[in-house]
Length: 202
Image 1 (spheres, rainbow, N blue to C red):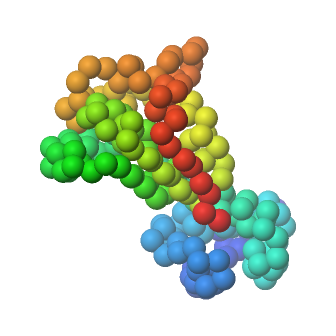
Image 2 (image 1 turned 30 degrees about the vertical axis):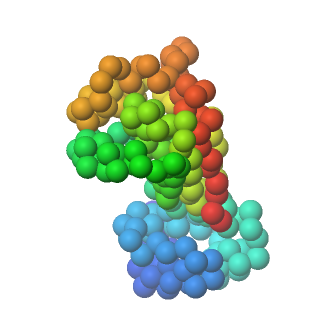
């Protein structure tokens, strides 16, 4: 016997109502997310926990741990080191010169995911001689990705692409100067890890 398509468990109208409801209750705005992606992820949660939409809303109000799980399951984390090399090149050429007059440099990376972009800023500041007077702050609504950001250990296979970004941004030397390869992992240098703070904003 054929089973009902799970994506039919929540309609797009119900999804819009849920998005608005989460924004009103918790202050998290998912209106910019792909509806198809959100629909799949919410439906998967409903199916996995055997919940109705009414039950889901009740848990999101009354169970903070469940709300954290909800955030983890529906958020999409896309990041890489020196993503958009042109941005970093422009930042270095147009913005960094003005930073020399500041006694303290502060960088806030909202939606920092697993931290690659915040560490990219740390490398930039290190190269420009500002790291010792800088504070880098990363926030995200997903506590699981923040734990990886704090560990600062990434898949070594990703470093080849990150290195291409690094050189495309016009930076000197090698990205390998800023991490230690350990088997199949790359650990960001301790100097860069000390100048940052990651926090969950749930």
